[in-house]
Image (cartoon, rainbow over all chains, first blue to last red):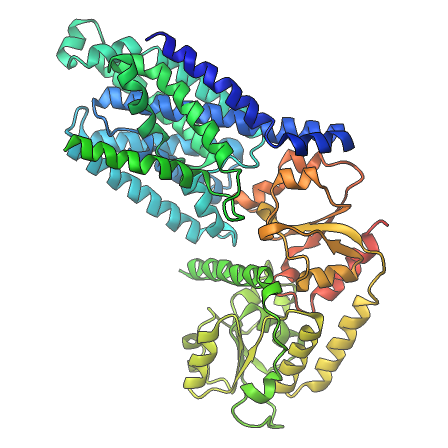
Amino acid sequence: MTRLPAVLALALLPLVLASLFWDPAMLRAVAERDPALARTILMELRLPRTALAVLIGGALGLGGAAMQGLLRNALASPDVLGPSTGASLGAVFAGYFLGGGVLAVAAGGMAGALVALALLLALAGPAAGTATLVLAGVAISALAGALVNLALSLAPSPYALYDVMFWLLGSLADRSLPQLGIAAPIILVAGALLLRQARSLDSLALGEDVAETLGVDVARLRWTVVVATGVMVGAGVAVAGSIGFVGLVVPHLVRPLVGNRPGATLLPAMLAGAVLLVAADMAVRVPVNGQELKLGVLTALLGAPFFLWLVVKGR
Amino acid sequence: MKRVAASGLAAATLLVAVSAVASLPTLAPKPPPALALDLPAPPAPVRPRRVASLNLCTDELALLLAAPGQLVSISRLGAEPRETPVATRARGLARNRGRVTDIVALQPDLVLTSAGDASAATAARRLGFAVVNVVQPRSLAEVSANIRQVARALDRAAAGEALIARMLADLGPRPSAPVPALIIGGGGQTIAADGLSAQWLRHAGLQQQRVTRGQVDLERLLSDPPQVLVISRYYPGQMSANQNWLAHPAIAALPAAVQRIETDGRVWTCGGPLVAAEVARLRALVRR
């Protein structure tokens, strides 16, 4: 049980190296011609791309596990219930209409995710039934997605319609070190805060009353999880767009391996999310029919059948 | 409401322009002797007095060629200084959103449409308007043919020949031994190596590198840098994911041997006669 995080961390290492040194023949050829240029490719392009895949994959996996634990619902996750799309909306609004820079876009992303989460909890209540929660979440997600489309249609930039794809499907291509510099500290701090809620989430699985008698401040736990998840997802979306299904799928993959305890799911879900996104981000670099897939398309291709399987299994 | 239509139209026009450039290699029919086919009656020597243009590219030609007072309406994009350098000539003209319904009330005696929007020409003809439908040029010869076509329709043949002469003078002879180059816009959008824009660039002494799918990513740019990087500025300073791409530190980190030149992105949208002066400017800047 405690070996699972170690196994996942070991699996992550070679994937990270493969992502950094992707297409070694090209790198070697460039290095022979111009070593400084090869270093630029590694430091300015590969490093932020790989590090962001690890951080955002981890954030989505951890955020999904924490939301599923808090709401005691297997369908809860940032991408299904709205925070991811809300973050896109916030980022788009801050960037395109308030004329914000990278920091403002990140702040907008976080605000958007938090508003979507707050709306979700207000609509569905803290421990709502699956139907209510999913209906509310899907409605928020669809509304935010439509508003992203609307906002970009209204944006004065002639490029804006191209950007819809980025904000709704996500991409880690051509990210920069400054973008990593903004997302990394936010995700690390919020992630550490979430990981510390493991024991409280385990207690909460026994019911709110039991958790209270075990000394858990349930109201505080709820706020911590909501704010940390929203901030983490928002910061990730602001630099990489809204990447779907990682947060939904990953906790389900690891939960059976940790005895179905929500608290124990957090760390392995974070690591498995990182593994999944780093792998998916490498897969999109392989051209299919001469075209590169969008990251969100690939994660949805993997995640949607899993969602269907959840539905069939739950019937 | 106004902004919705304008930006939607801008994006649509951009898409048309980009896809037209991208699809260049596959299409190569001869330029049509368009005037004879497109005017319902044989070219009348009567000078049209109420001309309406529905597309940015026909706006540019009309604003360059028409006599004072001959135009009554151009598209919003033609009047937008961020879209075309000739927008300053559009003062006082009615603006349309590129739709025939916008100009019916003006009762134009000639409607200029772009072949990129087939439905506009069809609709205008059905309403009984005289229509000149201008194709997207695929070669410098077609750019001249389009100028002649519009000039004759406006009964401004002399102005057309003068514009062509000015264009050819700006272009000059094609420099031999062109330098490998890459022209990039926001998001790494670029052009086909054998399309019209590449032919223009060739007159600046630049040979566009071959690129798949009309787009370069930064890894491709850094792993095989061109000798000259032409950066197209279009709506500079405006937030979008594509614009931010141009600010990526990796572009600044390109070797010093790579010459970076900025170009006015507006003229490349239509690839018409306005490109010629820009080509002359680029040619003077290129280090050989």
